[in-house]
Length: 170
Image 1: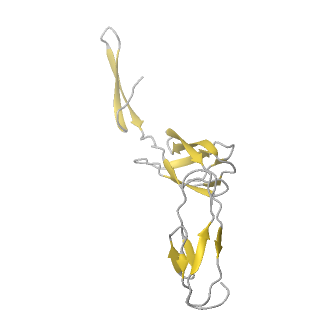
Image 2 (image 1 turned 90 degrees about the vertical axis):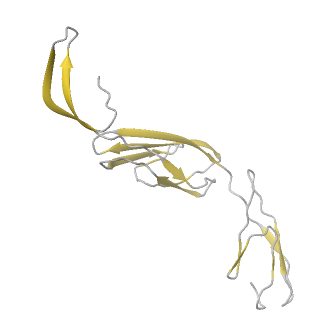
Image 3 (image 1 turned 135 degrees about the vertical axis):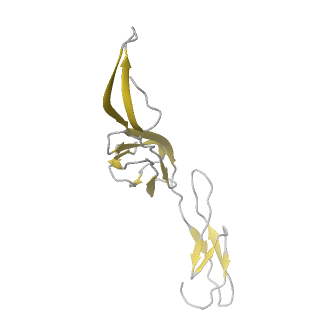
């Protein structure tokens, strides 16, 4: 058994225990192995998770990817998207196969958290007065951040006030 430290071509020579040796001009090529890896967007239930394949390989290319999402779903695309239907921990596995048949596998456990519930109330106001928004959103796990898109403005306060530039139903 020979373990090569680097990819490349190697000349083989064999020596028996008595010291006799024989050489052969056959070349052995050792190919680079893929280094499978990936990142993903924040996984929440019933929301699409984007998996970004960051697998690296030198001197050749990847022939095939296999993804196993840990919930019975699998993909063969390089960068799949997937929606998990329940909050739980899932072991996501990526297998990469090079054109020369070299393989690597990586498994990562991702925690799919419950999606937040977005809700708010707002008061009617007279033109020229600010409208107060009262946030009633909730999430079972973690903390919320806020982005309110009002007209062409984005507000990040939990309970913002907004002065509309015109009157009418909004």
